[in-house]
Length: 227
Image (cartoon, rainbow, N blue to C red; front, side):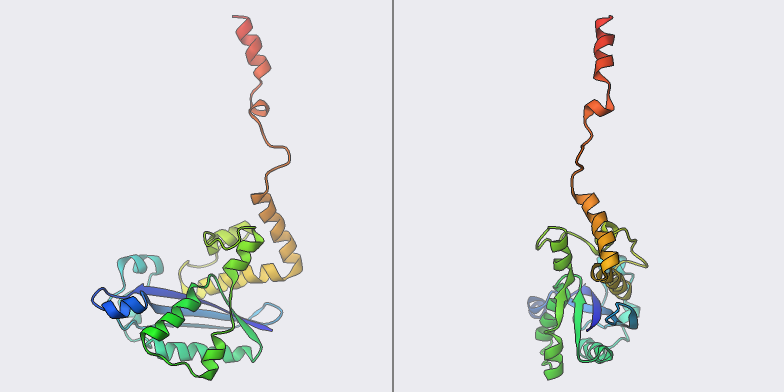
């Protein structure tokens, strides 16, 4: 099996588009993805900006977070074309592949944006939308956090002793870092080493440090008696 690791960046729908905003609060402005083979090596990558239809600017918050400005998306393909480009990219993975996302929000975003834009997926695209896997949920279960969504990708990498490489909230960098974390959890030697680091972080030490270990209360008592 091959793996398509994907990340999306989004921008808020402008307030004047009330009906469209009720259907979907955000629009995709960037898609980044990498394909890993069954040995968890990257074999291809994909990145495109996406022009939002229901806004005429990138919100200050999103611009600060992602570094994406309006002039970077103004001439980019809109959702329909960009999504088809992503689907065609997934063909490189062959017939047997899984799409890995860090939280199910990316899968939900595409479905909601299809609804917002009256996009009717063909049979191939419908099948693709059944292949998504929420890796954040899986990693949370590894940490004993169940369905927790509180762990960021950067935090998760730190837990296993890795640094985030590149710029956060750049879709391709996010996809690559998710791929690195995913491979660590799947390759046995890497997984055992990483899990030990996680255990060291989250499990209490068998011999916890006490105030008595830090201060010599016996000496303090003798000092008080001599006064």
